Amino acid sequence: MIDFSLTNDQKNLQGRARRFAQEYMIPYAYYYDRTGEFPHPIIQKCWDEGLMNLGIPKKYGGPGLGILDQCIVVEELAAGCAGMTTSIYVNSLGAEPIIIAGNEEQKEKYLRLLTEDLRFVSFACSEPYMGSDVAGIRTRVRKEGGHYVINGSKFWITNAPYADYFTVFASLDPSQRHKALCAFIVDADSEGLRTGLPVEKMGHRASTTSSVIFKDVRVPTDNLLGNEGDGFAIAMRTFSMTRPAIAAFATGLARTAMEVARSYVSKREAFTQKLQEFQAIQFKLAEMYIKIEASRVLYMRAAWAADNGEDATVPASVAKAYATDAAMWVTSEALQIHGGYGYIDQYPIEKMFRDAKLYQIYEGTSEIQRLILGRHVLSKYQPALDKIKRWKSMSPPDF
Ligand SMILES: Cc1cc2nc3c(=O)[nH]c(=O)nc-3n(C[C@H](O)[C@H](O)[C@H](O)COP(=O)(O)OP(=O)(O)OC[C@H]3O[C@@H](n4cnc5c(N)ncnc54)[C@H](O)[C@@H]3O)c2cc1C
Image (cartoon, rainbow, N blue to C red; front, side, top):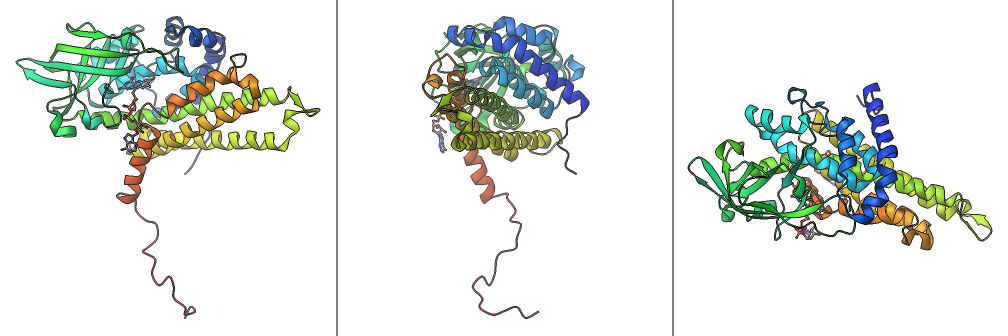
């Protein structure tokens, strides 16, 4: 059975998130984009409104929402401001390895922290010399008595300077690649851990990104997630849960880009007509609409798989690859429709164009999604038809 209708609870959630974006995000998006400040008051408000940490089970004080519900919320938030939404959503990314692989004590301690008060967790996987190739992590970990000791550095870590703790991926032996990866929960105030200065970015400027340096950081063995060697699988399972949301981010951003283009063409005139009278412009709007609708269906499909216990890796990659490319295309065309005004900050489309680019990069680039999908088509994919035989037969049917 297929049903694309939202439940009343989902409609309420969507309405709350949409109101939040309109009231608390859009009016301040320009300020945070220009200054690059961390939008702490907005995030606090989002936490107060119960629109953050949505996947944390009720048992640990969270709302225990599924991936689809989370996607519905982030589409609305990203429609308000992509950068703020990244700052807000990173808690879900950081907490997911604990939801997936944490034991009862770890969940009780670290998930509950996020629901008691506004606190931050960052996901620390990427490094200065490694991003796409997760098995190539160089941050080292060794066991020493009742502790693990971590040395190395992470880069591009969202919210790192504000994090209360990190989920960290490190290797017992980099030559063993994915087999040696481990995942840990590391408190931000651990001795030997420091974060670098925020990097200046072209977009998502309302999110803070920095390095995290580990110098002989001692982590209790109790903070290992799963077993030694489980790190790679935990990272991949995390992405299959969070990539549908990145597709939903992209859908929300693209939607607002289309809406500002729609508004602009209803006012701007050229050749004595409103822009909206030109069929070439209408076709651009139509193409935007097609891509946004398709993006939404694809993230719903991926979220449905995740919520129903299926391996969501493939539909999540389909959704992320499609929706993020679509958002880049939509924002580019929406900017083009604004002519020169699209290129300056008088209209919000210039910011959206810059923001869209990141979706094709973080949580696995567009190329990595295609790598996953290419491998899928060549391995697990089951052809629907039997091998095609007698293709060039020249005899007519004999039945
Ligand atoms: C603003 C921002 C926030 C981020 N937040 C976080 C975070 O919170 N936590 C975290 O862990 N990481 C984070 N990242 C890191 C992000 O996930 C990586 O940048 C991304 O995975 C790409 O890795 P890379 O930059 O090292 O590029 P590389 O892996 O060096 O790739 C460079 C290029 O080569 C392509 N490429 C690589 N391998 C292949 C291949 N096999 N086939 C074809 N093409 C290939 C890539 O697609 C890309 O185009 C963030 C990044 C940014 C920019």
